[in-house]
Amino acid sequence: MKLPWQKYTAHDNSSEEEKRVLQGYSLYVFKKYLFIIICIVATILIAGLSISIGIGGISIIRAYEILIEHVQGNIVNEIEDYIIWGVRLPPLLGGLIAGAGLAITGAVMQSTLKNPLADPYTTGISSGASFGATLSIVMGINIIGVGNQYGIVLNAFLFSLIPMFAIMIVSSMRRASATTIILAGIAVMYMFNAMTTIMMLRADPVALADAYSWQVGTLSLIKMKDLPIMFGFVLVGGVSLMLLSSKINILSAGDESAKSLGVNADTLRIVCLLIVSMMAAAIVSFTGIIGFVGLVCPHICRMVIGSDNRYLLPASAMFGAMFLILANLIGNNIIAPTTLQVGVITAFLGAPVLIFLLIKLKKETW
Image (cartoon, rainbow, N blue to C red; front, top):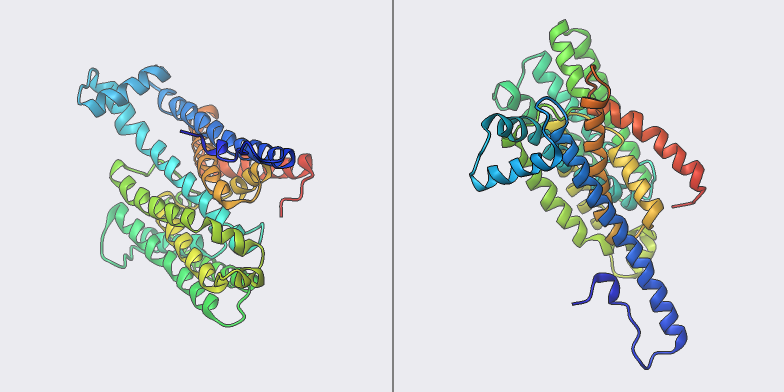
């Protein structure tokens, strides 16, 4: 069985020029897979550190042994099992799912809208979710009538869908360019931000602190029972976008080029935005607003492996997962004794890293 990059081999009767070109392309594809493999290995190592560092003195190897013991139903030490499985694992898995989902949606939005500044929150999803969560925390108003944590989650999800439908309406209009879609998302974002600010100005100190903590973005609120919902949205959306990756490549070349190749650019853009919005809404509802993952991670991957979405999407998913759990690890353990929300760390890491890469590489990626 040939590896993916070994498919591009010349036949015995091929000319020297053909062999040279195919050999070069095989190396080109191999570098892309190598980057993805490196991200997977780094993610596994960082995940091991995340569940081992802290109270209990559990090593990385022992942490993985505890996970295997729990899955097999052979729990040796109940205290260690509770620390790993009950306390540290849910935020870790939530970070992996959220990081992968946000990075994929960022890469797709940048490609479909042909704008390097596009990310999952450009459509105003984050501001809609923030308004819904603040409405529940500060005012105690839940749309479906569910209280406690799930009242906040459901409110955030439902209100995050409002900007999505607004963008769908704008996208369906004739002559709605990518710039028009982005500007519509920004307009919706500012409107929801204004309403959120009004509520927070009238909030009592306790509710204000809770609302602010949610808006910064955190993985600490994620429970094991929340993971299937997040994972389901990200898995279905991610697989759907991967199946559309070849058409997204064509769309990146421009609407006219896409139409000449038989791709309906407007319909494809609406479908991609719908999938992206649902994925981002599902993630934001549980984690709060975690910025820079959907903006920075696709840029870094694009600088390394190029803009081919067939490779860019899985690479962004792995890099985004690694980036988010690394940020959470730094916020929870490295900057002791103070614990910083993961959204703060992603901003601290993402902004200078992006600026450094843009200056250092001096490479035009668009």
